[in-house]
Amino acid sequence: MRLIDADALKKWVEEYHTSNWGIPQDELIYAIGSAPTIDPVRHGKWISVPHKKTRICSVCECDEPYKFADEDANVFDYCPHCGTKMDAKEVWTYFD
Ligand SMILES: [Zn+2]
Image 1 (cartoon, rainbow, N blue to C red):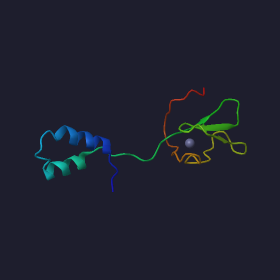
Image 2 (image 1 turned 30 degrees about the horizontal axis):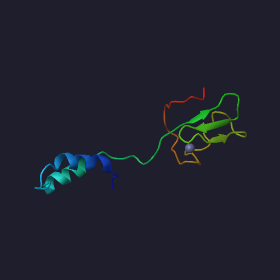
Image 3 (image 1 turned 90 degrees about the horizontal axis):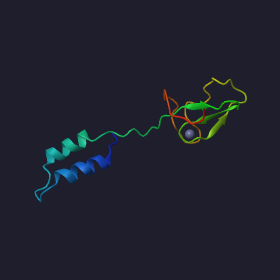
Image 4 (image 1 turned 90 degrees about the vertical axis):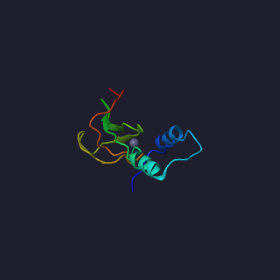
């Protein structure tokens, strides 16, 4: 199974379908096959907050205190609040 971008496919159909002759089956199968894939997993990063014993999810901004863990410890691989996978190398942040 592959999740595709329905909006991109719809745009292709609208641009292709300029007459009442319809779209040939092989062209439609090609369009479906070449539609962009959607990645349902969001990628983020834990962001430490200076002078506070907490870290913030870069996607939902919920905090996850680390009172009993060291600041660099990876407590969760996924955010328990929004499900984001914490594997992003870099994220834009305004917490600094
Ligand atoms: Zn989150």
